[in-house]
Length: 95
Image (cartoon, rainbow, N blue to C red; front, side):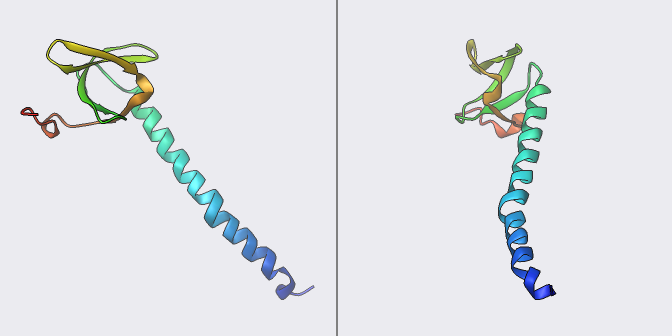
């Protein structure tokens, strides 16, 4: 058997790696970073949830987060809904 006989198999394995395995690893890294960020949440942190609502964390439970979206207005959302922690200066106080 020559190298030319194995070339289609090698090319198929390379395409499989580039189209399936590598993107899956990148998604797993992103998911892991998101879960790490969500587990490190603390009261007082300014966050944005996945629907785009900004607020300050007032309470934290194992599964839920109390999010103050306006003075005196606290909503309860799933902890997994927190998409990112934002800097306080990013939140527009006039909005």
